[in-house]
Length: 358
Image (cartoon, rainbow, N blue to C red; front, side, top):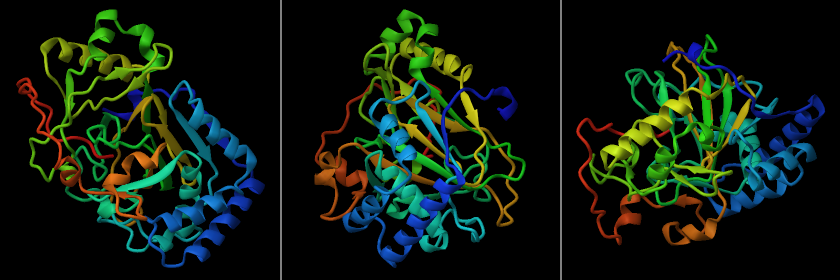
């Protein structure tokens, strides 16, 4: 698919004034100095981040708190003019920035924003357990349905297969792609509810779907799947959504038709945004799916570079799967070790393959 197939829709947006951005940059510099060489995935680090985050511009904090508690029709919030580092290193060609301090201002800015949405977390299986992750194209991975690809990235709930999926995720652009063709897409179920047939909605509310583990989490093998889940849940006027149009496998033919109907309706009404340097998109991972149009990578050190971060509303719920003082979840194999294997019907022929990880 090309970016021309999508039209920009209305999106809740906050643009920081120059004075607000300068205030935020000063707080970021304080954070970088205070954290030093600290591991970002610890409670001690997050306490420092949250204390400094309390001093962010009031208008930004108000928008974040409202989004956390009330949400938005489109399930996403765009913040522009977020401070990033004046001198950035080259886009990491392997998907890993060696030292977060090389993009310290941007890292601190993203962490402080996310601290108002919940408790920041990471996954041991993903990006070496980092709580701020690099999203950049990798040569040879162009067509993979993962954060390392550059082809069209299908709509998905982030880590929808995981028993502790994030409640919110953010994408902060440090460097856009050369042609500005890589647009981030979001789609919310509430906006398309009236266009879905009643039979479709009824099927999507049943646990008739499972999601294959992404490659980074698939230590159980390529046949690892989530427990059966419903695609839609919650009240009709504020629907929650768990979907992955690459890796979700319906367990009946009727369920397949219902998922296809949702895919078609969502795709026809997506919101798209081309992220520029300093643009931060927050996605409600319960209300909206997200994806990305394709773009052309050059692998010359100046390619598209986003940084990704997750937050959950209730950190206590995961205390059994984190080491003391850590914000990083244990490997999925360890989390599932004490659970009985899921007995699910075999997938329909023509399964969708490995899942999306970003």
